[in-house]
Amino acid sequence: MTELIINLTETDYKRLEEVAKRTDMSIQALIHDWITKLSEVDESYDVTQDPIFQMEGYESEAPTDLSVNIDMYLY
Image (tube, rainbow, N blue to C red; front, side):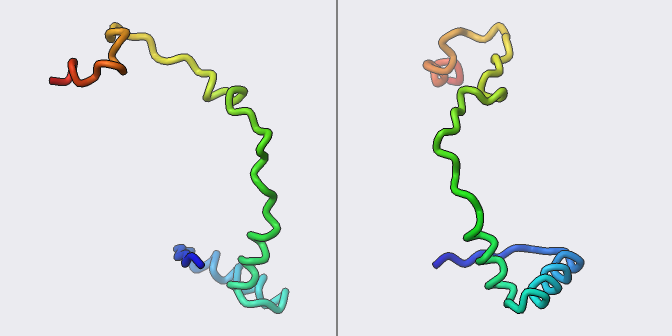
């Protein structure tokens, strides 16, 4: 089991308490119930179709082999 500690504003905590009382559950049970209802990660998601993934890099006058020979350029 993993312990999770979160910081909530007083307003958010009160709202969470209200929902827990209305559903006749503890806050811990309520959150556990919400988590179990989350949908699984979609394994069919293709990251190559993500617009951020498709962004071109910034063109500069950096050497074309910079990523391969970074130590040579740093030292």
